[in-house]
Image (cartoon, rainbow, N blue to C red; front, top):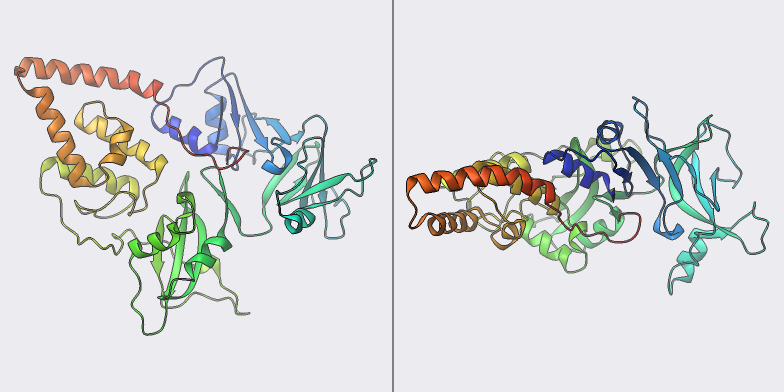
Length: 386
């Protein structure tokens, strides 16, 4: 089975026990050591795969072993060449970081109807024996280790991977700054909680303008960008922090507060016990101190993977099975509470207390089975799990 680290983490979170004969393939994002050690115990073997879509698709592979060191991306697969080069296009010594270049039979022809991008990223191969051979400039920073394997170190630019999607932060910033009420904007990928990497936008309102609401900014971005590029949180600052030479100091950007964001809907506290239970689940998973009964889960920063955690917790708290699709159909606390109440009334009508108790026990027992067969389609933009 092949999946991104985000999906493997999700399976572990919902109590997946693994399979003895399963070969676990992980790619699309960096594989952290903690997750790697967990996956080793859940199957016959665990493998870390690396390769951008432009090399169709995997270029290196590494069988993960238990340990405390960073997980290597391994060695080139057959008919693939990997080079770690300096700015002069010469190989750097073992252990020295450089840019990763990929060549070989998997190399794509280029980008469709984009000759400039093709010329920039698909460059002549100075080491190839074949006439016209090329290398792909990945923009990744890596280094060769003494044993011949390769360690991935990061990016040269502001490209990030979130839940398997390749995202250019500059592209989001460009669209954000087009909003007439904003003067400055910067977007970063944060992982303030382990395994929960998310996009956060920091914005500065234009002079003599009131900061736009989160709903306004989301609508503005959705006109030009796909959902996976919409930041989970928006932070309004009086000014962006700068380095001594006047550049934006991304490391000094503050951690988003756990307060409810400024939405178009006014805050209304939960009223019934069902609403309070649902609100407690949302607050825990979204990392917010409070949520209103009319707040939309996705306007608060929720996304498809978080809905699975909400799904699991609601099933446990209400003691019954619930479709993941229902979380999209009823995205506010009030709507979900009303739906659950109607379902409970329908199921309970005509039943004795003994029958209702038997149903609850059956639901609890079947929930464990339900977790094991639960498969959720999470959109992958392009290859490499993206």
